[in-house]
Length: 178
Image 1 (tube, helix red, strand yellow):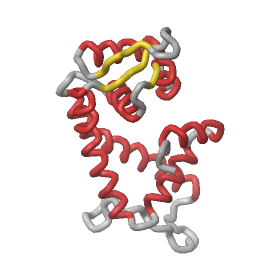
Image 2 (image 1 turned 30 degrees about the vertical axis):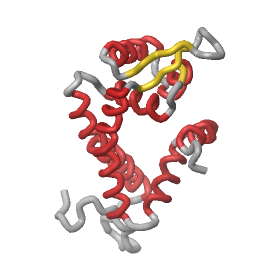
Image 3 (image 1 turned 45 degrees about the vertical axis):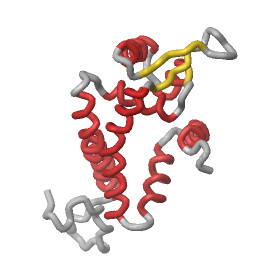
């Protein structure tokens, strides 16, 4: 692929192309960006996948633990809206997490029909274990990419979210931070 000096570094824009140049065109650069997203995600999720496998859990468990941890008391309906998975898929994952003591389910105080979800102490510990290598990887990537990287990365990822959903995503992610 590349040598150690250029590994992980984004390819700079190529100089103006001469006739017969191998400079990638705009479509090729977009394809490369998409592939980088695939490879980045593959490696970003690899450490949590290894941790989750110790519990015989998968990525759906990871997402549930993450969003319940970030939103204590979240309702099942709200979680379904965030994850965009079927009720049946969530029910299986939730059942496993509840039975194994990682999530606690309580009846809603205002609406007794609601099921509100909370991490247990074990669930909180699992969430921290999963997040630690991801935080370290992102921190290292920002440091390697330079001071403007974090803002640009956030802007690009937010722009990938459907435009009509961005305000809700921002509200979920940045609650209390702004």
